[in-house]
Amino acid sequence: MNAKLSAAAAAILWGFTYVLTTTWLPPHPLFLAAFRALGGALVLLAIVRCMPPRIWWGRMAVLGTLNAGLFFGLFFVAATRLPGGVAAIFQALTPLAVIFIAWGLLGARPTATKVGSVLLGALGVSLVVLSSHAQLDPLGMAAAIGSMLSIATGGVLLNKWGQPPMPLLGFTGWQLLIAGVELTVVAVLAQDAPAQLDAANVLGLGLLAVALTAVPFALWFGAIERAGAVAVAPFMLLVPVTAFVLDALVKGVQPSGLQVVGAAVVMGGLMLSQRAAGKPGNKSTRHVNNTVAHD
Image (cartoon, rainbow, N blue to C red; front, side, top):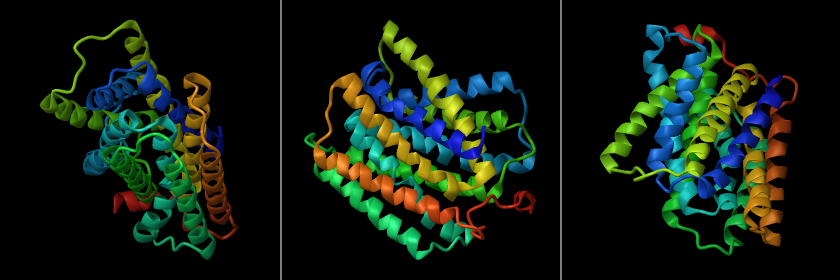
């Protein structure tokens, strides 16, 4: 599977997480985040048993925290406090954050087209948020923005450092394991765990760990490794599109006309960004040579 198909598949699978969280899972965000990370890690590390090189331990801790630990914790706070479509639309801002973070960390100076796509995407998000009929929880919105910035930074650092000399599934599994340990400690301290689980909860947790974590994260990291963070990031727009569709099909939540327009504007802005990133000669968004990882 090429990088674009891998990124698209990962984003679509992530879009299912919102409806799953609000229908089949208990309302305990820290517990869900910890289970998601540990469950996904155990699945991947059972398939590929390997240890990261010692020189990579520090970087692995940073990537695990940004790509999964901090991201998952804030993600589930947002998913449990905001409507799925509204929460998901903030993930569509990830490519915009990646553009500017990559500018600072990789020296990938954005073009006028990229800057224009940022403004267009911001306008689209504003339409979605301002036209929502649901009450928008400030903490939920802050968590959604924080989760977006976390995974954007982690993706750019992964682009900068490359992949250590180990299988991709193992690399992904170790990041999830680090996040799982961090989140388990936080969940225990916060005493955020359900008293009991019913059959739907158990099935939902299984789907969360395997189909919506282990699989899409392996696909996403592989796409970044092959194509670079800025080129891959625009596929995040499929997350809110999937969430909006599932809200309508599963929960009967019909988006307003302005929300549909806003989502379309976000899509247009991010597709414009992708087109700019794919122009011949634009090498600033591609994977940085692995020699950087060993300096």
